[in-house]
Image (cartoon, rainbow, N blue to C red; front, side, top):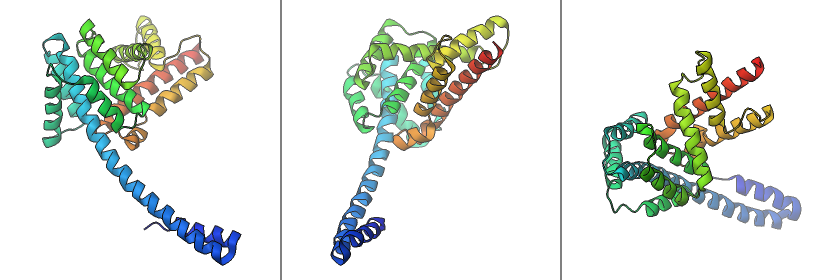
Length: 267
């Protein structure tokens, strides 16, 4: 039961209007408590619906893009299964994700309509939309390249999400750099040539260049960490099952930042 609205209403009402003010404050406080309680229930229900829409849209759009080349490759199926494994989807939840992937492969799948439903479900929260787009890129890069048909669909998805062509290209560049960063050992230094490539990829992941100041570097790092913070994303509608994906992104961002900082200190 919520009572703080009533308590504060009586206090300030009496302070400014004695007994009559306290009565009015009590009534207004009651209305406030009732409104807050109702909105909490509504938000909780909305959050669950947003999470369900997020999961379905993720795998449906993955399936549609995978089918764009005519045949869904084994690598693309493995990526979808890998994502399900990372989310620990089992039983009915996994069956629903597989069904969404299958529906997405249909030639008449309403891509823009489904993406629009997803955007509405998460209230257009940009960090959730970006996370969604990054998951699609992870699926597209299953075979290491983006062909013309996949790129065309990615552009349609990005447009429906509200991202410009330039923003999409920036996300593609960052994700490509992240894959190479992993391939070269993440934040672990190896040969001089490998270290130079890692450093270049680290800058790309952070979206800055070697010419940017330390302050610009730190600002970019903090922005990316805020955008991908698992707890914050879940609170906004990210399915809890996707927390591991968000954690992996923050770890990659952290490693890239630490590598750049070490290089700058040594220079």
